[in-house]
Amino acid sequence: MNTNVQKPKLKTSAMIASIASEGQRTQSAPFGHALVELAARRPEVVGMTADLAKYTDLHIFAQACPERFYQMGMAEQLLMGAAAGLAHEGAMPFVTTYAVFATRRAYDFMHQAIAEEGLNVKIACALPGLTTGYGPSHQAAEDLALMRAMPGMTVIDPCDALEIEQMVPAVAEHDGPVYMRLLRGQVPLVLDEYDYKFELGKAKLLRDGRDVLIISSGIMTMRALEVARELARDKIDAAVLHVATIKPLDTATILREAGRGGRLVVVAENHSAIGGLGEAVATELLRAGISSPFRQIALPDAFLDAGALPTLHDRYGISTSVMTETLKGWLG
Figure 1 (tube, rainbow, N blue to C red):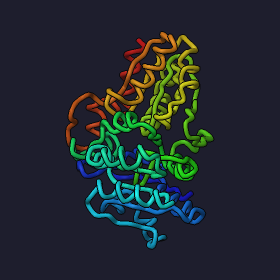
Figure 2 (cartoon, helix red, strand yellow):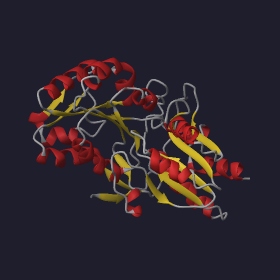
Figure 3 (cartoon, one colour):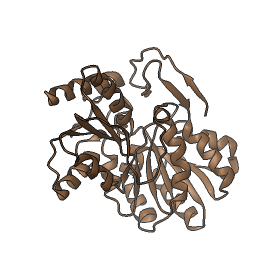
Figure 4 (cartoon, helix red, strand yellow):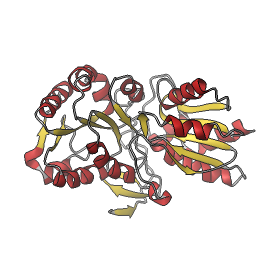
């Protein structure tokens, strides 16, 4: 694992999509390197993209395996249809684009050509949720809701570089279509401090705590761990349950942790408050008759602003500092 300590200058441009904090450890292009390693063992693996290899780290695969790389141009519907055709012939396509282009522009092609057929296509999508400042054209705030609703589709929201590295071979072992959010470039490295091992369909308790249980996915698990450390300064004990697999949901673990009683349950997600992890968890708690106090940290049901990511994360309540103050207010 190639890691380095990044100390980036503060960025203000909407074009900067780094989520690493100053001084945070990162790993370069974990998806691209993991796919190259997988391809060395699995000759059926191919890489496909819609003119975004450089921006989804698939260029690393293209350089290592040029004969197994397909550049489909700016045509996402064609990308999904071609991936379905290759899967029909026994290939295992790893398809990359931006999350907005896959879930909004090519949804019907994934639905009819890939999911209905149960094909072995792995769809890895960059710029999930609020990880770009470009505005609504590029912010995929509804992708999990859309993909959760697609029958037969497995949905994953990884936290960091380690999880992406482990996720790639794990989804290759799964027979069927997978939608996975993708962090690209210099990706934060967090979970190695918690002896973490990704398992498809399994939630993992990263730390325990008596006062509040934070259930989170994706980059919000990184934030939740930071918040837990901040809360500890005020003698508030926070547990963090990381739910990387959004579908199928690890209902048993979620209900066990939420049902322990005496704790506020908070779901934190980099997604619209509608249709994502929060509503999925709330539904399971209601069905099970668990009545723990419940709150949600999520993006609003709105078209989000363009701008610098730190500003936007503060504005929409998903930065570490704002989340910490929000939880303090809820805990009284």
